[in-house]
Image 1: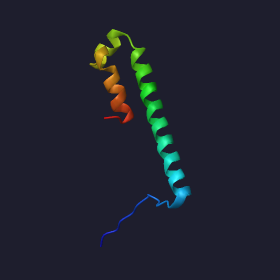
Image 2: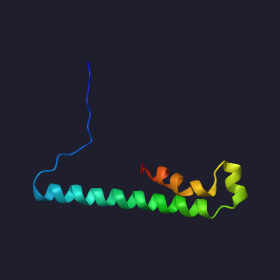
Image 3: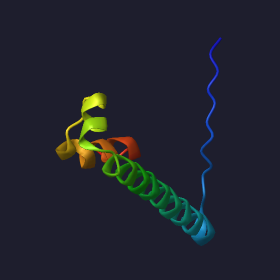
Length: 71
């Protein structure tokens, strides 16, 4: 026997569209905060610390993007 579960809620009408838009903006803000936090932390490391992690300074932005879920 198979079961399917979904946490998605179907919103209809203006209230639903508004709720979906608010959730989308909130998710984007959280993603941006994660990007900024990771970027700041990596930029504050010394070149030696980055080398210990196997990271070159030119890779920091890409790593922060990946950490935040950007493609």
